[in-house]
Image (cartoon, rainbow, N blue to C red; front, side):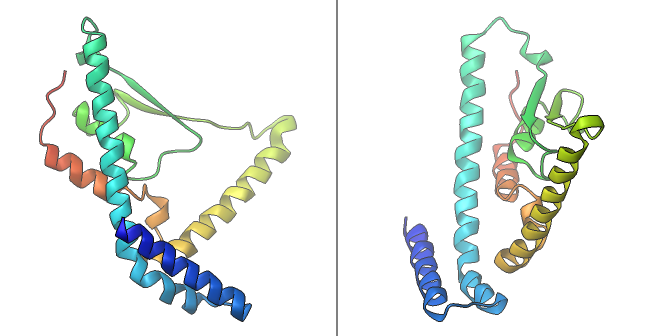
Length: 174
């Protein structure tokens, strides 16, 4: 779409300028990102819509494929490598679908964890330090890109996903 082409063109021009100048600054990067913010947010909204529509269609398909299941007793386990970010689209979807405001009775997030004891200690420390650098990078990049250092600490499609789900109204489940 036009917004993607515009973002790619702006990025190409920025990168070419950095290469030509052999330097950049945080202010230069922020000036480059400022006009791209609304384009990126629109991409998040499109992505959230597509993801939620796929989740909804899959649940409808399973209900059709397995009509004798006790869908009213559905429990969901979402697998991930770390706790879900705030406003995680899949979490919001299942909270809506199951009408569960307190996300842990019927919907559980299973966090993959490494041991922090014994022979795994050195690896756990390395992973913890790596995570810390990612958190710092996320905060700095989010501040520059979105004017909100917490933006990448949340599911970036979360606000759009929440808006879409609210527009769906009450679920008809099961």
